Image (cartoon, rainbow, N blue to C red):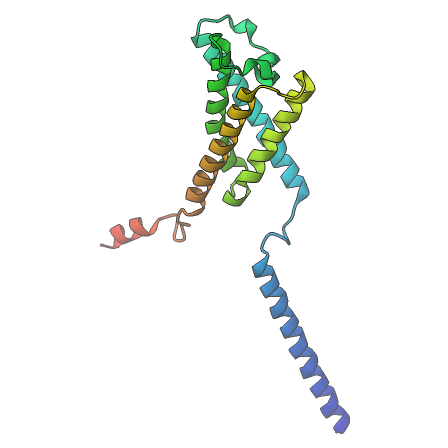
Length: 193
């Protein structure tokens, strides 16, 4: 009898510890919701996607603006995307075209952040990563940029892309989650009225 009592008490104590550990683990998960779901392959895929979309869009804007300015479109090349010499404020029209293309690309990059990254907290990280990789590409192509115009344009691009990307992601995160057949609360209240 005594042995059974001790066994039951030990089982209750073990069950109490298990419940306590489960609660502590659950509170730890609630405090760090993304530590458990850390996926390096997803992050690398997102970085690759952002970089590819960023350069495709940058090339599109350079091509379109060159075509609209009356320049021959076959003159557009990697020089416009990767050379710091192309980003100059001079009477030369091509410098202004590249500057405008970079700023338009920052606006489109914010939309890409909203689609690819989907988290406002990560927008600055992915923006700086994309621009750092662009700096590395430019340095490999034509040496480290030494013109203040290149640094100013890319600094404005980082700020514009990060702030607008965070704004778009926050708006997306704050949207209502449809619960009852995809209807919003407003549609349900109108239907019930």
